[in-house]
Structures are given as C-alpha cells and as structure tokens.
Image (cartoon, rainbow, N blue to C red; front, side):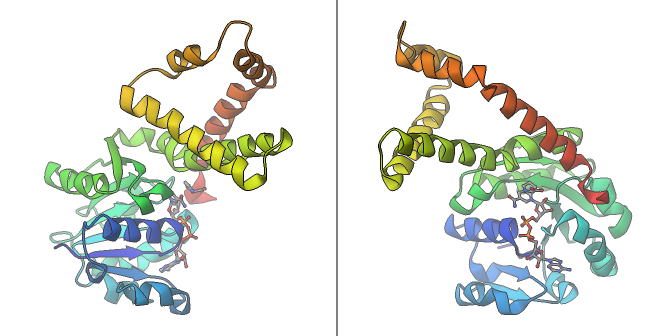
Length: 267
Ligand SMILES: NC(=O)C1=CN([C@@H]2O[C@H](COP(=O)(O)OP(=O)(O)OC[C@H]3O[C@@H](n4cnc5c(N)ncnc54)[C@H](O)[C@@H]3O)[C@@H](O)[C@H]2O)C=CC1
Ligand SMILES: O=C(O)[C@@H]1CCC=N1
C-alpha cells in the first residue's frame, strides 16, 4: 500500500485521512499527518495514524504528499520541503484553493508531478464531490489520484482554469446547502415543529431531493413540476422565495466565492 503524508491536518486534511481509512483505501498506519501543534492530535494518535510536527521527516517515506494547509501558509511549507521532495518517486496532491500546479512547481521544482484536487468535507463519510486537474501529471498518476478520491466520493477531471469555480460550487457549496437546510428547519420551527424534529425533517427532505436527481438523473425543474399543484401551496412558497431573490442570491454567492477563491494565495 502506498504511503501518504498529509501536510496540514486541519478540517480537510483530517476529513480526507478519516475518509480513506473508513472506506478501507488504506490503514491509519499508512498515513502520516503533520501539524504544528501535536498536542491537538491525541485522537489521531489513538486512531493509529502517524503524526509529526516535522514536515521534512514526515515526507521521507511518502509516495504521495498531500498539501492541505491554508493558501497563506503554503509558501513557507513549500520552501521547507523543496529540497526533500523526490520527483522520481513522489507525487504531490494539492487541495489548497487558489494555488495553481505551476505555483507549487515554482517552489518545488519543475520536474515534480503536481495534481490539484478540490474535495469537500463530506469526504470524511465517503460522499465528497472532488474535482481534479493537472497541467503536467502523467495519465498513470491522474488515474491513481482519481481512484484514491473515488474511494471517498465522486470525481470529475476538469481543466485547471476551472478549479476556482469548482472550489465555489463544490467545496464551498456544501456550506451553502447546509445553510439552506438550516434555513428550512428554522422555517419549520416557525410553523410549529420543535427544533430537533424540524431539522430531521429538513435533512431527510434535502437528502430525498438530492437522491431523486442522482438516482433518476432527472432535471430539478422536472421534479419541481411534479410537486407544484395548480393554485397549490408549493408554487406559492416557491414564487415567494424567488420574489425575494432565492436563486439570484445563490448564484451571486457562488460567483463571489469563485472570485475570492482565485485570489487566496496572494491575500
Ligand atoms: N475546509 C474545506 O472544506 C476545504 C478546504 N480546502 C483547502 O484546504 C486547505 C486547508 O483548509 P482547512 O483544512 O479548512 O484549514 P485548517 O486551518 O483547518 O487546516 C490547516 C492545518 O494546517 C496546519 N498547518 C499550518 N501550517 C503548517 C505547517 N507549516 N506544517 C504543518 N501543518 C501546518 C494548521 O495547524 C491546520 O491544522 C486550504 O487551502 C483550503 O483552501 C479545500 C477544499 C475544502
Ligand atoms: O473557505 C475556504 O476558503 C475553503 C476553500 C473551500 C472550502 N473552504
């Protein structure tokens, strides 16, 4: 089994590690997690992961090095590991938003194979939507990374110039859908349900909507037409939401996120 080192074990780094282990892609012992403060890693040690606060030592035996620090923290990490990366044996995956493969190679060297991946936090339960892109990786490596991320969700390979758009739609997107579920549950409370029941009802309803599209491959508007009875209460609610800018707000939010994602490295 390939050895994986994840540099930056925060929200997404840990979600990836847990997802890979939960879906039996590898064992905890195949993964090394790095973080500056190891005192915060006791749960991961107990779970059997290797942990380290030394990125250079941590990548020594790695076949795959995953960069999962914040964009603003990346340059320091790249400078630190640059002379220790072995381009012949090691593949670099970057999940860092707004940083191109070329940006990474500028620090690590031109012969390093770099693949960008944009997962979301549902990777922890094997339900990520992950977009991958590279400007220099060979097919064998793209295939290997595709298989890795397919273990923990769905994968689409895209052109690298769409990576910030993918960040907004999928990585930030999970927060947008979560907020809409929360809003639905708040509406539910106002019309009479206790909070925990309202949330459960909103979550299952959202899951049903997503599964309807996934399993039948139908279009959202086709499914909406089946719900909206003439002169009925669904169309009344839906139109009220649209008069208040529901679709427009969602679209504007995604556009702003994409714009922001593009500028994160130099923020
Ligand atoms: N959170 C998310 O849903 C997603 C995040 N991303 C990207 O992943 C990256 C990480 O995001 P988060 O996990 O949310 O951030 P985070 O702040 O939760 O995690 C970053 C981790 O890196 C560690 N770190 C910082 N400097 C380090 C160093 N020199 N050596 C080792 N570890 C170091 C920090 O201690 C922290 O644990 C960002 O670039 C973000 O754009 C991508 C997809 C989804
Ligand atoms: O909010 C952020 O900047 C990161 C990137 C995608 C999800 N979280």
